[in-house]
Image 1: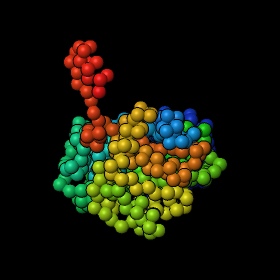
Image 2: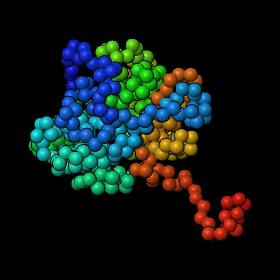
Image 3: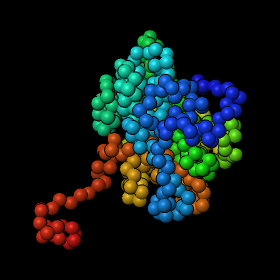
Image 4: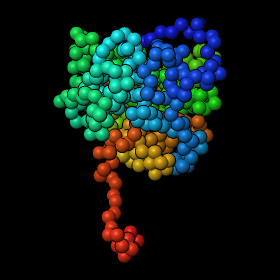
Length: 376
């Protein structure tokens, strides 16, 4: 993947104060983004809550656990960050169509930002995507369902982009798009009173989010915004699509492509573009990689909901189950400052928990209530 390069020597005036004086969204960090806030396509992404997870921490034996809840973004996933940056660049380059290949969350974010920018939209998704994600994108604009997995959808979009002046946010616009993920790292540091945490658990699909969080932490270090980065970057993947975790655990540098077969469809990228770099960063940061069994994804969703009142999608279920394993194996210590990333809402992936939820139906009488609820 191509990388955006910055002239850091020109950013000597960037400070904690200049950042906090900026807008209450991701564009407060525009000095470290490839576009300016003045022309931003902005629907309010960023500055999502970082919540102290005391209940979940007690359950897992952790005293300093935090949840970065990025499902609080406008289209309910972290993808609003990356698409805001990519769409801003698409307008700057005078494209008239915004497009993407998506496992779900990106579809909604792209369609919403395309609507805001007044662009035509072409959103391509696998045919078996969760219904909530399909309709969550279709309400804003065009959705094209493709009979194939994400890697096949992505290949088709790459071919379409060769001879059409369309801005595919995660293909020909990808260098700019991926920079938006850095804002998650900046916010975590700012919300933790300008310190980098000891651990971050990241759901990994292409690896772009994982690598850019690491880049963001180290940019703040380079510029003197923070004094040190001792963060261990942990990879969380589901069993049915875990090429990056498998490569790390096997001591290999390059993930081998796989055919995805997982309930966590937002992580179903079998040939991750940033896989090599993700493995490299996990080793550099003394991080770990966890492969979560498919039947433990929904239990992670339920655990977070029942302890912290946050309903996450399957990627979040993978993160919470991975966090549990990291704690049980004593890789994450009791007093370490730990941040778990929740990147999307469970309202988009209801299919994943439907079979694990039970509900009672009663008649509108006290007798029916007593018989059904109290006499089980």
